[in-house]
Length: 117
Image (cartoon, rainbow, N blue to C red; front, side):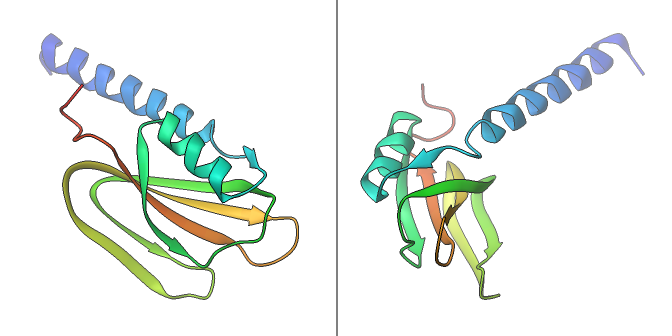
């Protein structure tokens, strides 16, 4: 393998690891209500595009799944969901778990396309 290719692969792995750490940083974050969650995600550059079902509050982020342009996920009841047609945008599925009651699932997209700064 050529040195430039090795450097490129290593850089890609480092960036992927950093992105994973940023997403993991969200897990465990607590919110008093949905308004708090929306403000938090807005501060991170994301807007809500879906919710299944409305959870009880307060709740903590239990899981985050991210993708580019489209995302597939399964709800707690087993229903499969897919959001597509968001080419150029980052998408993420955020599962929140209240102390009591069923989990809630939110879908967010980046406010700006991935290439915009």
